[in-house]
Length: 98
Image (cartoon, rainbow, N blue to C red; front, side, top):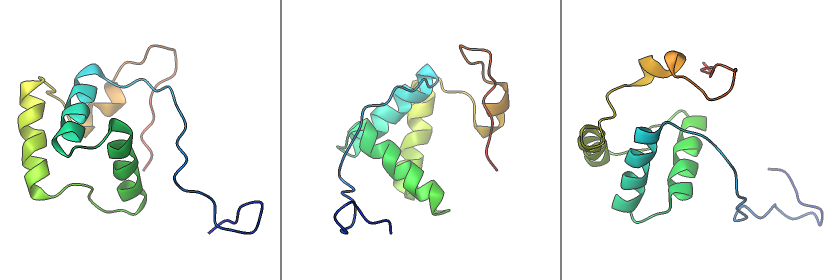
């Protein structure tokens, strides 16, 4: 683990504001999942990223079932296979990291 300026472990609790663009229906599903777990959207995204970095699944079976329902409610009718075809607002194409 990296050390801070004074030789101690860095404060992992600091949060910064970021600006990201995501597909509208996906954001609705993510917000609903965060609400279901009574956490912020930022906390949900941090958890998803940390699990992805650790090559583990971020959700239990109950949450996966809830996500399936929410995807229907918000008409999120695509999955990972659609990622390379998703349009972005600028000229760059999104890249999948494998």
